[in-house]
Image 1 (spheres, rainbow, N blue to C red):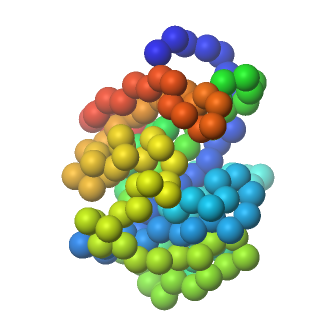
Image 2 (cartoon, rainbow, N blue to C red):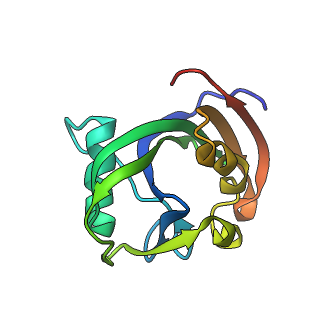
Amino acid sequence: MEKKDTKKVLHTLVIIHDHPRVLLGMKKRGFGQGRWNGFGGKLENGESIEEAAKRETFEEAGIRISDMDKIGILDFEFDGKEEGLEVHLFKAKSFYGNPIESEEMSPRWFFMEEIPFAMMWPDDRYWFPFFIRNKKFRAKFKFGEGDKIIGYDLNEVKNL
């Protein structure tokens, strides 16, 4: 994939994994509306990536994370836009609370064989196998018109 200097906005993404299920949320408004996704968003001033991931998960699903592992970093570029996203993906296996609906997300548990890839971002089906197998990875995805992937690079890494 060609290299381009795109300004990246830092985001977090958390997927709760309670084997053999994952907790996803239906995005009810804003960017990604109408898609199933993990929980997360932008960092607030002075917040670490980990703090933002935990805060966003609580705000969006009522779940408090006690422990999580960073499993991936996803860089997203959007054709025709100067700003992209750098998304830090976490897997949370240790948490407490029951999922509750928020203004932004409607959470639901999915068994592995039921994960609704057709109603998720198109890149998810590429990196999700790394997530499930606890393989750390870095990925770059370039999206074109209609959220079609027009290029990508995905590699397992030892450290993030």
